[in-house]
Length: 62
Image (cartoon, rainbow, N blue to C red; front, side):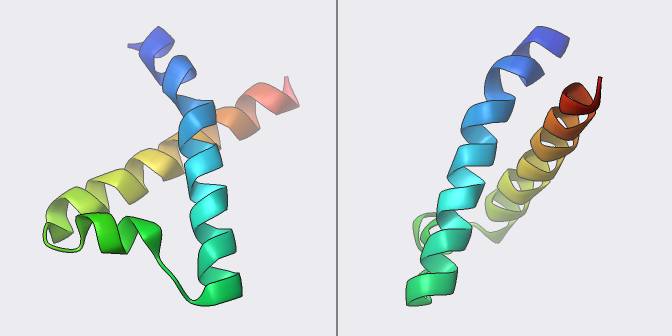
């Protein structure tokens, strides 16, 4: 499980950063557009991004 999280953390953080940039610059929420029909899946994606960001932060502080 730890290896899977480590493998997915950077791509998830990059996707989140790009999504925030698009939202901030153009008011375009890519994740919301792609997963808008499935709010539960959208929430899972955002939770995974949170976990990935926390894992990346902890890893960078070591």
